[in-house]
Image 1: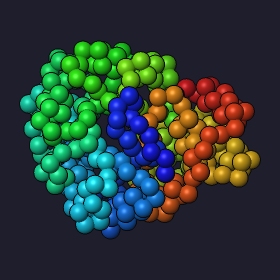
Image 2: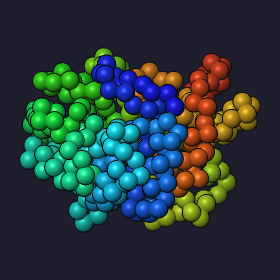
Image 3: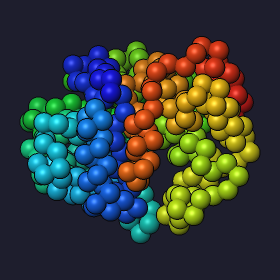
Amino acid sequence: MQQRYVGNSGLRASALSLGTMSWARETDDQDASELLRTFVDGGGTLVDTAASYADGLAEAMLGEMIGDVVARTEVVISTKAGVSASDGRQKVDASRSAMLTALDASLVRLGTDYVDIWFAQAWDHNVPLDETLSALELAVRSGRARYAGIANYNGWQTAKAAAVAGFPLVACQSEYSLLRRQPEEELIPAVEDAGLGLMAWAPLGRGVLTGKYRGHVPADSRAAGTRLATYVEPYLQQPASQVVEAVAMAARGLGRSPVDVALSWLLSQHGVATAIVGPRTPVQLKEILDSQLTPLPAEIARALEDVSSRVN
């Protein structure tokens, strides 16, 4: 798998990153272990998690595998802080105290002295930006994080954070796919101007671009469950289905899978350093790793962009 530099930094990460949002919930220990080993054997390096995933259980599950399933030196670990769940509602607290307390807890769960990239997971309207950034800076200066970044910031927030930080931010995480191209308007120009690398999450349109929802909702899919049904539902509407059909048509014409087409398009876009995929099962990961991940013919890419521009 291709290794890419993240932004203007010296950090290198695999073109695909392994997301762990489903770990400890939809994905059990056995499947997670197989996912991690298969991902690394396939050339993957970056594993993305967060303190908020399953209330820390995803980090703990990953930590149990470091040194057993894979060596610490085989993986680049990114995690996030600043978001938690309370009474079923998401709470944002990016204060210096909350951030650093969360980082120390993450390191314990992960069983490591440092993470490779540490992110502020969300913009906090109640906390001065300088305070949030000071936590990121201290983490880097103290060696608890090798690099730092921001996640789910919009364009102006990203530009401001990069401009006022007293140290280099290296990455930004945001949702980006053929079903969500809003980052192209302001975020990607801001990311490129600041020298950050974009880590795109939900690159398969929350699973919809795989084509598995065409005509029905599989019983074992996220859309059929209770926890993530509302997460997938926005992309199951009629406008989005036009993009799904276009991707499927392109895949047939190229002799490639819809997964490959969607990921290959994304990885060719400006500013993208890596695509964070979140397979719940080893079968799903195998389909992803079988992808060529090579640029699409220009005319195919333009056709997909024309169709997707009508729903974005």
